[in-house]
Length: 146
Image 1 (cartoon, rainbow, N blue to C red):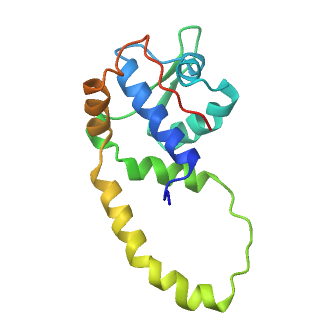
Image 2 (cartoon, rainbow, N blue to C red):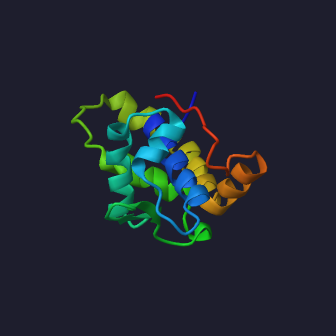
Image 3 (cartoon, rainbow, N blue to C red):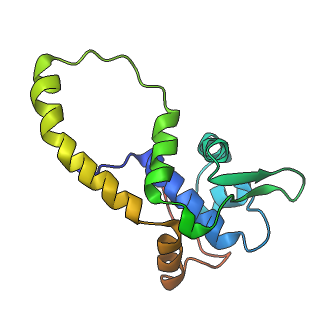
């Protein structure tokens, strides 16, 4: 059972893509979307949330796009997840007492362990893994369908 939403996985992949492909020039959303086989409108809200949180920096103009706002080692996967999951408006759901009193407390420790583990994974770690797997070239396409 996956713990991360598709939106979180997309955000992580987008930030890794920007980190790997920027190399001194901003990465256009259109290029990023093309590499992942997604329409740009699907990525824009995610990218904008990451800009507002200070993970990415938006560069305007004809050669504009996105670049990292900080060093790769200073961005954790957990931060990216918190940004995009926090960007969604939660719908008011009234939870029954069984969930509030039994289920939530039982899974809280596991969720904390998972969140702590994500805090230790940095963008630098993922970029190194991407380079080792050959995903650093402009011609690579990582299929990521949501």
